[in-house]
Amino acid sequence: MAPPKILLCGDVLGHLKQLFKRVASVNKSAGPFDALFCVGQFFPDSADQLDEFNDYIEGRAQIPLPTYFIGDYGVAATKVLLAATKDSGNQGFKLDGLKICNNLYWLKGSGKFKLHGLSVAYLSGLQCSDSQQFGTYSQDDVDVLRAVAEEPGIIDLFLTNKWPSGITNRAAASDVPPGASEPFGSDSTVAELVVEIKPRYHIAGTKGVYYAREPYSNVDAVHVTRFLGLASVGNKDKQKFIHAISPTPASTMSSVEISTKSPTTTLSPYTYGEKTDHATEAGKRSSDSISDSQYWRYDVNQKRQKHGAGDGNRLCFKFVSSGSCPRGENCNFQHDVDAREQSLRGVCFDFMNKGKCERGPDCKFKHSLQAEGESNSHQRRGSGNANSNRSTECWFCLSSPKVESHLIISIGEHYYCALAKGPLVEDHVLLIPIGHSPNTLSLPSECEIELGKFQDTLKQYYKKQGKDVVFFEWASKRTTHANLQAVPVPSAKSAAVQNIFNLAAEKLGFKFETTKSGNNSDGRKMLRTQFDKNLSFFYVQLPDGTILSHSIEENERFLPQFGREVIAGLLNKADRADWRNCTDSKEEEAKMVGDFKSGFEEFDPNK
Image (cartoon, one colour):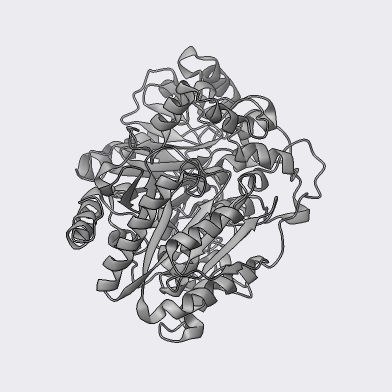
């Protein structure tokens, strides 16, 4: 399918007639376009313009294509938007816009939705210390977007009213228009969010000037971001207020397409002036030296803080969701350890924070506080409905409609082997229990026997290619379905694996417990004695039989993709450290599975 055609517009300021006249002209010459997104103030500046504005709102004039706006402030905004919120058709959790009239939609607050395959995130309103019903965004709106940043996948478009502070840093001075570097119309919170969200396109208004910045690289992501600042409709300087793009949705692009950079790409403007520039440091690394193979991108040597300095009633989303907060003691929200524990048990953040959740039945999280061990007790009692619900929703259960069967390589009685989603290398696979289990260490002995066969045959398969294999598992209390990861490394680099894991542990402030083992079976038996089901646990089985393990303390900083991050450093593949940045098409994944199967066939214990 052809990529969607999208029009982007700056501050409309109520000039709907002039806007849609221009849209009709562009649509005729270069269309048809699928949608129009408006950033900056959408409503009029003065009551003199209301007649023209109301002609469209009240249906006397037609809006030519679906139009979405986030600038919910200006004359008559309260009246129009209040009526929209009371409309029965706009009730519920509508992230894709509240309908104002035919073809006009208000993106309220903040959120993310899909449009013609594009992933669109937005922050409506402006920053303001006063609490207002319309025209401003709240901390809740910001936290929603921080949650969006944690989700898998790449955001195609990010819409904000104000520009991000610092966007002109590292840009070519000759391209920066007058006034673009001034603080007016900029927002530091928007800058913080765009660093976390890493959209492919960031569109903003309010400054009154047009600026298409050179694309810039994102820290810890392979794709670039393009910023577009748009002028206002009818501006006296005749600066560009409308812009057309036709982006292919990231979800359909190959990893090569996603990571392609133009020659004009700059470093991120948001790391400007920092003492450590990750991109610069990465560029200095050579691929050959042993010290370079020990590169690991985190530099954290202390435990998580248990509490922030804030004494407000609201919870800090960043702390609750990840266990740490970059604002530290300067955060104005609570760093509540108990709320963190409830979050790990699947309780909805909005429910804990506000006592309610606007998503209602559409929310995938629990709307009741969970006692410790409650979910496990349900499982022990053998609740048929509970097991059925888990297997239906779980991505890894073979009985689930969500399982991606084209990734499966081999199926046994208790385990199956599948290509990793967004693999670090092409033959990176997972060993996954067929039954729903949160870890591999608490399964019965007959499961261990089959797992051992899988591990032994994978070793033989990789050895034929001149590689050794590293196995690792994060047995987290947050994990719903276990997976033991198997990543091959060139035999020449096997000796460096233990050093780089120890270095990474030191950076995070802990030390591994080291166990020597002659074979998989003995090593796994020792791991089972070390494993405490009441704590999270990480271990790695090295090519020489050494096992590194670590029981994770309550409130300790530990990273979900720790094992993958470390091996990415060893293999000089920092751009693939996060699986969410490694987008392969279904066809590419199927080819990798086919190639693996053909080579693995002679070793497959289930052939």
